[in-house]
Length: 152
Image 1 (tube, rainbow, N blue to C red):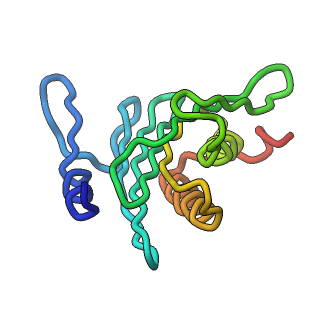
Image 2: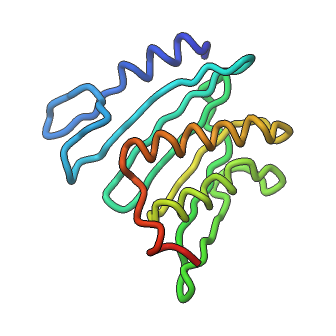
Image 3: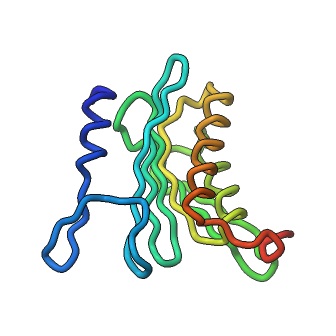
């Protein structure tokens, strides 16, 4: 799927609730699913993002020049020390591009996180840029918890 087509499809995304369809917005009332989609054009690549926030979980998708799902990782804090555990749900373990992103988002938000990422594994600068853009958006949406609570 071309970047232009993907951008148009993301902007037309809708959520059904009680039989009604409403356009996706960044600010949906409490208790509902919150969805945010955005695109960042870098020098030679286009990064597409989708963030879905549930009551106690965040799903984030990062697409690089395409609409492929990529590898899927789940991360959550584990007891007794509030360490973060990450596991690969889809994809091999040789490419761990999204696992570090998922881990750091859990540390910053305190929420369970599922991250789908199709950034090429040989592009660490692109991965760092994608993570920075994602964290900037999460912060602007108010998804971060107080740092003292989750500090190790």
